[in-house]
Image 1 (cartoon, rainbow over the protein chains, first blue to last red):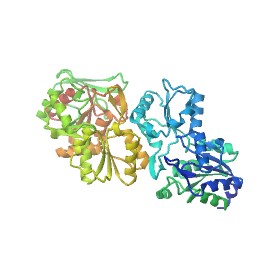
Image 2 (cartoon, each protein chain N blue to C red):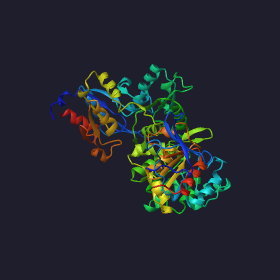
Image 3 (cartoon, chains in turn purple, blue):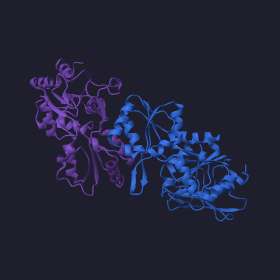
Length: 263
Length: 311
């Protein structure tokens, strides 16, 4: 177990369910997480935050986390919105957006008339039959339906309830059109690797800490990053029987930092 | 293999390539008004699969007997004639919105002579599954369909029945459904159609939402409507007829025809309703029979029933 351990130089941290539990009241920091992030920085580990959060802009996420006591700059946060915007600009696309109203500012200046693709984010209350139907009609009229999904998470925890994420709605449109969505965000390897490159490290020098066995742990391990599963957030005991075997399963972020520091 | 005996008179046959550029074998009967049959996926050209002794006919409704409020020309009379040779008939349909009573009243209105007990829908199939498993379902159905579940206990639900319920296919109701499934509820899909035709265009069917819940929970839905084998077999069970002695006639190549063939029935596609050019070839496996419309299918069945099969 020792061989590659000493090489860990960087951390990718999921946000929701690892740093804090979300809630309509702004949520609350998970015990020990603020100190754990500080400890990583004090010990010289490079840190990036990789999240499929698509309800808030990066500024919004940063401000929320700062309120909970976390120290970070906006540039350390990797979310799907900037990544999909890059694609939209490069390909000159006109998206039909089903996204949370709070991230609409990110899409300012993007033409959306006569749409030729669909972008699906964590739209919460905007996941209505009529909206999904509009998206379906655009896609079904295309020879090669162009559907972008900001992450494809199944659900997350909010206010002590498990709540549907964007993934099920993406799966619905995929089934309806017989097409596969392009997932922008975790578990897409390109998303992890963008953050790893930003750290100036190799994948095997990096640990990803998350509460989603498939999207966080599975996605990271598929591109050579070690995945640690925490028992917070959306974690459910049956995750430990999953085919995906994490590098470690620990109680929370503080324990994950302990674990890596002791290697 | 038997050569189909369209009628006792001589018939001519030829191979031709259709506009679909697939080879079809055409039997042109010189006697019975040029009845044209386009077989046969299986079997070499000129040879049709044996036509069985039929005991039951399953007939799709919308698109086969009628299109919205219009009867397919000749369908009312054809059904009457069919009953003279085959008394066991079931009208089988994937509906998640309309109760048996509503369907029955529409058919009567259109002039068909049927009995309400002859209608077998995906709602009927869902109800019998719920009863058999003694489930207490949360019903994700539009109010019109609830009638078919009268008397089923729904308090403290341990199952979810999903039909076409646009008014419930939004975030909060889906979240409630999702949580019920996470607590171990059984998921029953009335059917899994991707979309349906609405007056203003195509609209999402129940399939995408069943899929969404499956994706979120890892639970696999038990789907009860066409094209599931269990659907056709349940309908036949009510008639006490074996699948090999039954034919299914419908306009949906996948849900009606190939579904029935998979369950062991004979499948017959009619080119009315939702039939689109190219459907015969769309899914690899081909329909056993293709007819212009329901009356032509009936004519073919009657000719085969009234002629002794050569051995």
